[in-house]
Image 1 (tube, helix red, strand yellow):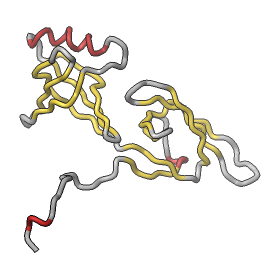
Image 2: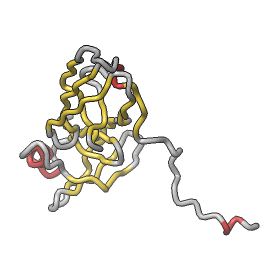
Image 3: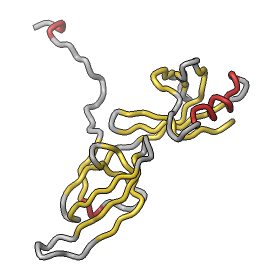
Length: 157
C-alpha cells in the first residue's frame, strides 16, 4: 500500500462540539443546548420530586448567537448536552463593502470567513463606524460554538 491510498480531509483532533452533562449540574450563567441551539442559561427553577421520583429542572435561556429566548424542561438526573464555547480576540485588518471582515490574531494568523454581526440590530454598523476606514485599531471578540462563529463584542485600542 502506498501513501496515495489515504485521503485525510480533516485536520482537527476529532473533539466533540458538545459534551454530555447531567441537567442538575447546569448552573445559571452556564451554557446548554436547547432545540439544537447553543444557549446561555438565564434562570433555573427546580420542581419537587414527583411520584416517579425525579425533580424537574426548568431552564430559561437565550441563544448565544441570536438572543432568542428558549425554554427546556429536563429531569434533574437525566443527561443533556452542553456546547463547547470558545472566545478569541482578533484585530480588524479590513472591512469589505459587503461586511466581510479580515481579522488577524496575535500570532499573525489571518481569518477572512466572518461577516459583521447582524445581531443585535445596528451592531455591525457600530463596529464599521468605530473602525472608520482603518483610522482606529479595533479588537473584536469572536465566539465559537457548534461550528458557528460570530463577533460578539469589540473595543477600541
